[in-house]
Length: 407
Ligand SMILES: Cc1cc2nc3c(=O)[nH]c(=O)nc-3n(C[C@H](O)[C@H](O)[C@H](O)COP(=O)(O)OP(=O)(O)OC[C@H]3O[C@@H](n4cnc5c(N)ncnc54)[C@H](O)[C@@H]3O)c2cc1C
Image (cartoon, rainbow, N blue to C red; front, side, top):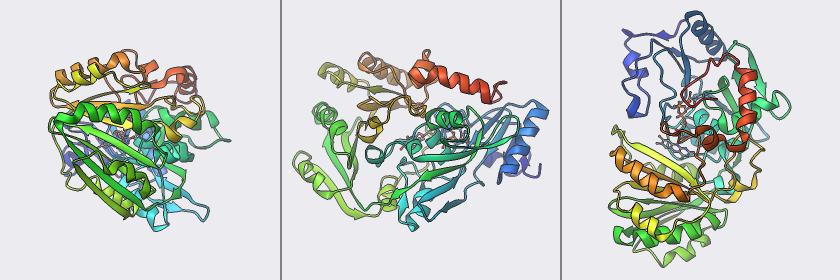
């Protein structure tokens, strides 16, 4: 292979490090830079011949380090071409990152519902679901997927959709990250790129309990065209998001001491505004999360506020929940919200998660994997697990693609 990078190569220390700081010490035997389907086929053949463990890497953000290995990393970042057809289908190379996706699609007045982190990989995000500010309106990123091209463990190349290799296509929509093969491109039914209002409301920390109580009763049931996330830090409570119709913000004008609303932003501008000022954060942060179908009681909210963690609430509902649980591999279609506990003190994060856990649904977002879970099959895949296990056996019988908690 031409682009096989091993220790000693000048690029090795640049390319081996994933975006997730916890895994920065991982030292693969080699990194294959893949710029085409043929490169992926060749790299998988090399892994087979040498017996190396192989993992695909898109944006490298996996919270459980699943795109790192001591074997062979397939760096898909050169495979990042994006094209748009006249009927609004966007074909996106598996190495593309979200900021690039929004910018290129916007030139065609289009976008897809997807997440906020500008360097998050489209493949990792879409294959595990994909939550974002247009999700309550249009569903998960994977709900807009109409086809994908995949290199399987034996080197064969398949393009799957509702008609061709339909089981594989089903499995890729919500449980596909690193499980069945290496996806090289994804085709999405794009949606109009909206102009939108961006809002940030800030409260002093003393009001956090009341804000959480009000948010959990309102945000999951709000109109599809408004998505309001809530972050509570040791310093303040901050509700932020996007409204596709400005009048939806009228009701917000009262309660917050500090209100920042910017109307008429293009979608890429709005997305960028939420990562402005973010520097490369190389702190090792522990995160644990869970989905909830009912509100947290007030005594639990009070306890959560004692552990010193950042609490990130993401609203579900809307279009996310209008897809049946078995229609795609993403089973979490009855949830009201996701709560993520984050902090540098892993013990405090565990205590915070334990306090909320009795009220949770027991389901976990596959893109927020938690290496400490014991009942991971039920937590990530629920009633879809048996079908997923059968599909795994069919497409990757030797479990070439594996990681702790893989199918
Ligand atoms: C800063 C930040 C912001 C985030 N924001 C959001 C958000 O707004 N919404 C949301 O839903 N999630 C969000 N996430 C979570 C994110 O969806 C996951 O971390 C996702 O797995 C990242 O994908 P990646 O390609 O960057 O990571 P990687 O680590 O490269 O990949 C993740 C997994 O997918 C596999 N994989 C990658 N590429 C392929 C491929 N081509 N074929 C097969 N398998 C592949 C990897 O092997 C690994 O198992 C965020 C994470 C971070 C760190």
